[in-house]
Image 1 (spheres, helix red, strand yellow):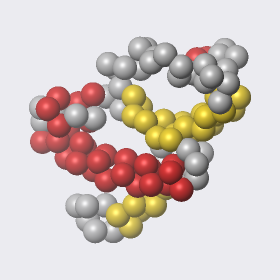
Image 2 (cartoon, rainbow, N blue to C red):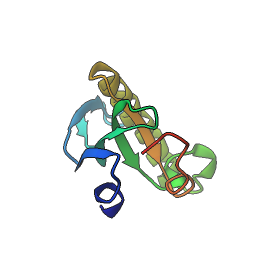
Image 3 (cartoon, rainbow, N blue to C red):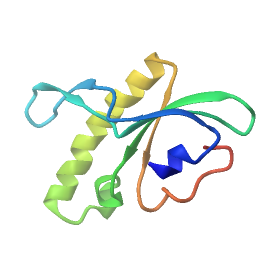
Amino acid sequence: MQLFDNNPNILTWSSESIKIPYQNPFTGKYTVYVPDFVVTYVDAKGNQIAEIIEVKPAKETFLEKAKSQRAKAAVALNTFKWAAAQAFAKHHGMSFRVMNEENIFNNPKGKA
């Protein structure tokens, strides 16, 4: 990913490198969620930040953007995955965020 490779604030990054256990709300079975990226970067204040990042289309991110039943089911399933990811991140001193086409190129000030 050129965005990560070419950014001098990015210290390390990996793709699909961690597995987070969660319970599928539809089947009741335990399975794993594999987020898209794990990135460590230095923010504008010089703090080292480790972050888990998931990239999804908005229609699978927000229920109000989900038009089909499939997209609505994806939002519901993602909600459970992301709750597990937030707990995992917190336990490991990291943060978690979801990005979509609406915000992927609009970096808030201070983010890598």
